[in-house]
Image (tube, rainbow over all chains, first blue to last red; front, side, top):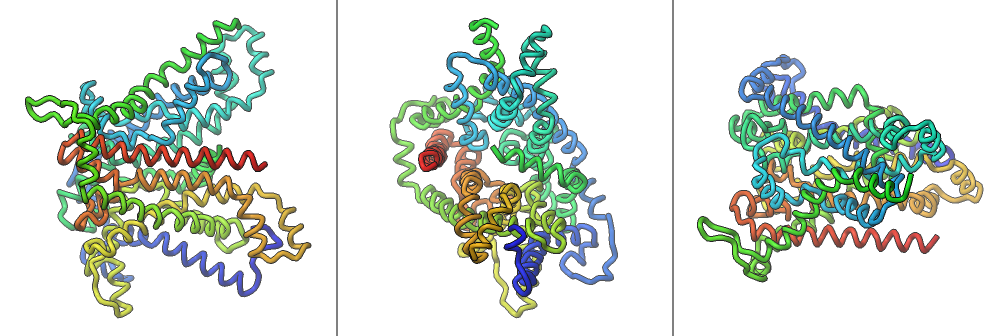
Length: 275
Length: 291
């Protein structure tokens, strides 16, 4: 709220307290997870300040499941998905933003369908398709349904539309082909939007779970999320210290990246949402 | 560029994206409809046309009705709560509050964590006897309770996790909207003697309407799309108390391998999402007419 309506006196104190209380509640589960993961099992539910710190749980978790392989799989998944997305989305957004052709509006409406009916809910049919294509249990199959991203096309189309036509025309007068114009004029101007889209896409696919759970079935293709679930559901019984250590382990890269580039993350999610 | 060259370029640029969209969005949506009229192939017996049999099975399936009603309660329980909290959070971190950078971080962090990891942490939090929740309650003198294991509390526990995960995400959209609002409005209102609450109710909130609509649509879609935490925390139990529609589809499709019935269930989900889309269009349309 703006200056004149900022809370004053007792109200201000009350609101600050409320905000911090809510904040404390919001970090509580995470703090708890950290506590459990960095202390020996017998302290997982006893909160004594003198409890010794240990990395044992992480060592055990790392040894108990092929997390290294899961990491490789996830990194491959997110980079491959993002790379294809960037190309497809750029081309399609350019077509919608700057070309006149019959069927443009209908096709655009068909693209927008995916904003409502995401691949997440079409699991049964997509599984059938992957089986028919012989792609079951591969990393490609995890990313494929998401590669033509309606959200990305929409986002970039909006951005491309704001590029002044004069720049476009100037480049053409210089003898650039449409693809060169795209590469030399549109793509550089949309750089912040690409960054925003990339961050959103990477965190989405790093975190995605249900579809990878269905379509993968082996250590060679499982991403971290599915690996973590298999690990905590079957291998460990209920050794919470090790499960929380594994949980933190799998989220660490994203969490660290987020803490380092907080501002970019928040702005990216913001930019991606405002249409 | 000639007109036909424009056409050709447009189509060719779109081609790769459209092929993938057709293959993994449009075709499966239509195939779901078709397969919902067939039987599930079993062994040597191929699928055959059974008309509305799958839908008849659906209307007679108590678990389907329970999953549907669970899902509606889940939506009613999570959407208004996460939107209200998001607005509150945004107002707080937009104001001059001590440590607002840290607060924003605290509110937003759940957003970037995988639901599956978050669910693991919360599962531990809810663990009977020695989970944190039980310990807090015990120190307050309350009796023990199996939070995720009893029908009366399991769905509510799942809702808390969902609100916790989503509110911070929605907060940033409100924050962006609040930051773009002109301070002149507040100054003018203050000169007119409007109270703080009145200003919020009559100026800020109406101006935030487009943001609210955007957040609302996202929240509704998520309420029918997000089931990761169900897989980890309850597997739909106890006694189907936390079975949501998509989770039930997953069970029917990939644990019982009844793809025809799963297709009929998916059609219900698609119909719900279609209604959300129509409602959104209708609402946007009306708003345009007002202006």
